[in-house]
Image (tube, rainbow, N blue to C red):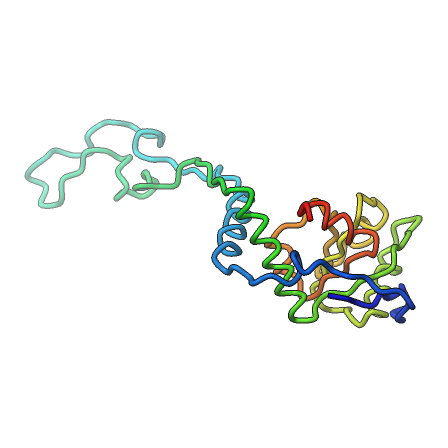
Length: 209
């Protein structure tokens, strides 16, 4: 697949980039995508949720009233879930939500997500850019020139660039990732991918093509 390269003014250049068919033009596997996205979201969960059950809630263990003769239901402890301020029944406990997936399945899921973007013409190849100082205004101008302002975008860099990252950090719709950090969830979450020209080779290296 051959794509034209744009500059920061949104104009086509004389250059083109060939995207590998073995990465950007495979038959997508929806179940692999589901599993990889599920794992990503599960790994984001802290799992520190907790509530007090009958054995941990504070309160007296004195029997509230005699067993019989009151005309009401039996009551043995103020810590009962039926009482105001009492314990919670089967409340959440701290747990680890993460689970493992095979490396090949994760690779398949990411290539499937990239293939979907390529089939939908949602990939823009941009010339390598340099931002000396973090400026959100400058990053917004690039998006506007590419006619992607207001859309969820994911910019893929060859390597870490703090200035570009900080420029996009305040934009709710924009994300910046290195090619080596690409994941299925972020790819599918974005409406459009902006792949820097120099990161194309890095993507192929990550997928060992």
